[in-house]
Length: 289
Image 1: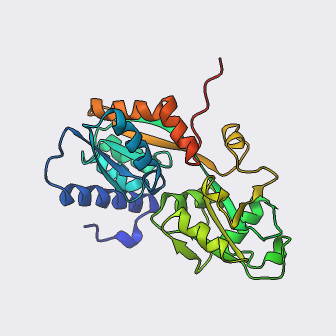
Image 2: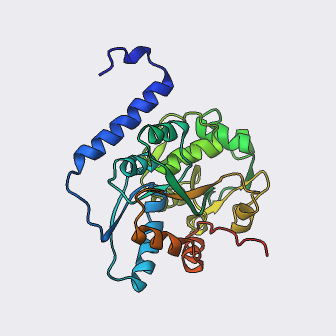
């Protein structure tokens, strides 16, 4: 243990934290994983609803393939992959510099498969008079710099924030996409899934939150345009809507199993991409002819 942690750089601390994740994963699961089972670890954004739906569709044609799933965040999935406790790391962000360095230290190279993208819709109560916010206004609302709707063109009323829980990939993703990585405002209401956020916002006239594009279509809420651009599949694929990011499946290039590769190919196929689109994610746009 380093006796000078308080003096170490942020980069060193990040590497230490990644090391702790790797060590805990290695210790937590000592039994050898079964080769006929595809083990997936990682992002809550992918694991919450998308991965189970993709797997259910895949198993219709491959009933003999089993899956072992655990979703505790992108960092957890990458850590599991690096200690050979996972076949696929599901990630709702690219690899960080520190993760790449740690992989190089372990002589690991990744295959990076883009499976589509997710877009975060900013939602308000359906009765809100607001229909559009700028990126600066969204940032200021969620960081707490703006706390009353009147400051962004709404009524005289306090803003009630509804966000995802700390370990969610969407919690961090929205912070990066919409908040310039600044801290969230103090004491927001936190939820473990999009459905719960939508339900809470639908019951609170002064609420604001975020969800997937599909969840934003549910009764009681409406999606806000950002800078005049509505969150739609078209605006995401055309790189017009600002709050969108790629989804990845990572594998260990040297140890990628045939089963894992076959599942990934299904996800990237037309049927798999159709499932992404149906669930409010955004499938990869077809290449130009």
